Image (cartoon, rainbow, N blue to C red; front, side, top):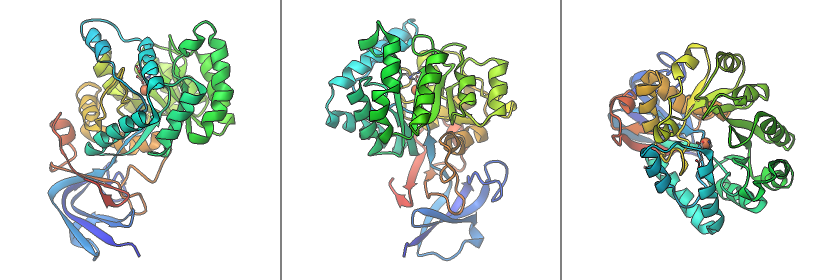
Length: 390
Ligand code: NIG
Ligand code: FE
């Protein structure tokens, strides 16, 4: 028998279930939530909470679903401080910097890569992330890509094969042969360790035809597509994502009206990654335009050593509210339920009976403080699968 715990005296509970409370966030005030084993058993007003084995007093603070960070690149070695410094003195970001991390990652031992990964995961957990997706993409050989995915799969179910991050430096003179490798032997070695396949569809990486070939091969091998699309320039990535029913088109910084219309008509989530625009001093993605068109928007960190070296979802929420036209409610939804949608998951990102008991307790009376108090470490408690981890 699993034991049940009630968390009570919650000033604001974000359930993301409109049938349980107010608005899209399903907000309940003076609330309680009951955890049974690794699941949510009940959520409602505290005065109606059922009897349980244990009781936790939230002290008049806010509780929300754990963040779902649906886009990160955490299997890597080294960092790119010098490149960041140069950029902050005026140099532009380019995909070419990825090669620096590829060299460092290939040279690292399994133990070093896993220690690095674990370090960033703990960092993210301390900031409220209870589910994360992560990718390969800094190996770019059959062995190094498979190794990255094997290591990642020890820590998350949401593992993405990104052999098509850039053309491997070993194939600089023959990109077509690299695409053959990515869709051939590398795919065969990687598919057993991954759920998703991703392509960086961008000038300096892979064009629309290459991206289509890679994602189609991945689908045939049982992987589901997601795409790095329209980050640095306009391009075919977003419409390709919708055409292939990708779970998510990520970045979406440079969008035509046709791109927005395609996203609004399809089931592909637009995942916005403001850490990348922050760290590359690039133009912000226009979340307001997407939301007003009816597009489902997710917010994630893109944590990687090149373009966005932050593991903090709260930081991304603050940026999205300040600079991308999102309301605090929208940004919190996008970082929880939106991330779940970008991973095609319904068991996370919401605090509704039957959902996974992944919760964050904030040292604040409401979720709005995540944007209102930027840079402040507000996460005071984290439960993952019903177990308190912080
Ligand atoms: O999502 N855009 C491609 N990949 C990463 C950047 C990787 C890097 O610069 O190392 C991104 O921003
Ligand atoms: Fe990325």
